[in-house]
Length: 584
Image (tube, rainbow, N blue to C red):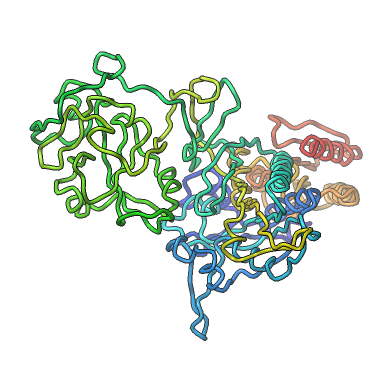
């Protein structure tokens, strides 16, 4: 490709709303352009890299025996009502109506569509197992889109769905997908971490995410240096610990009755600790949550969640426990109505208007302090199990660095990361609710089990840039570079043109993706653009060096002089060697 026939729209400065490196560089390099809030279009240079990411994904999924298909982006609302997710998906899912007044959905995900399509075709156990996939457009009306294509409203996802006879076969499909993911990300030059994850709105049981470390990551990863334990903080569990008293010794049960004490203008755990001359571990913190679309039977829309005073509630764990579409802290008016007290004085003792959910740590506490359900009042000498009985007891704590690994006893540390891929064992969540069956060997109808496997294509591309750049621009891994080699004549005329054209022809004939920068621009502009655009290899043809040319790797500090008649062969060798490393 000659640059004069291509669009190279680079910018000196990134837009003000671009705050992370990948967003800034994608805008400056002209890979994407913003059309609206959370809506980005790929320009020709960006689309070339995007297609390479797609190509690697396709190759590895095909290698794993998966079959590509293309369902519609617009889906009938009826199938979402069948699955039970019509209400649970929340306002992020667009629900237009067609001219006949029928509810429709702009696909935010594709479990329902694939399940409905398989339901109409699956008859016999002889057809199983199989895995179908798509690479298609999605839309989620994110309340706060940010970071360019890293978290946009419209995006491209690879979704794969396996259909198996039983759990054993599902495990095999799941493991094949996980292996394919590892190959995919390795080929793109991404060093991913596989972590245990929450299944969220997708449902199911086993789940893991493929994360890439990033200082601007949306997710917190909990990691153990002593073993391979790795989990998203939403899912992470730690070894149970014992609550300590003010002297640092295990709390001891009391026979004293619950007693009210005045605590004027003392609301927070920190204020209480100072007021009562004790530590946060002495307190049972009670938070009122509103629950949307719970999958367990509750007496109302609100629950009271109790947790030790030095800990925080993990809302993802709480949401999963209640099988709800979402949970959120109650408004002040609801807290006052439920507790008959201002915010800051909620407690589980004598609470009548909300069911109590206790974190496991609470049930090991003794002689505790709680809110007194009155303004400026707290209870002391509270014994969980004696003075209140939770409706549910479960692990709903946020795990933090310094907590203890439940598997090896190591001390956790944390890192930030971005999710690139997510795999789930869905089980029969969708096939059962949507009445999908097959006939087994005895002719009996059986519900197949499903797995779900997703990769965010846009997010993966942005993450490659986030992890491969310097202060001059992008540093593409060879496998996803829009062009692998740039041939740059200082001036596109005379002997320089002749040499540049010959290099271009030799590289193209060898299957190398090369751009010849024949633009009528100053050399400095061409060099700056080549570094910003991140071409892995740059060959500069100038009068002063002929019959030699300058060959420079994007990762090198300085170029080397190479005879012009050997430059193409050297570049070809480098390209193939780099691809072999990534593909090996």
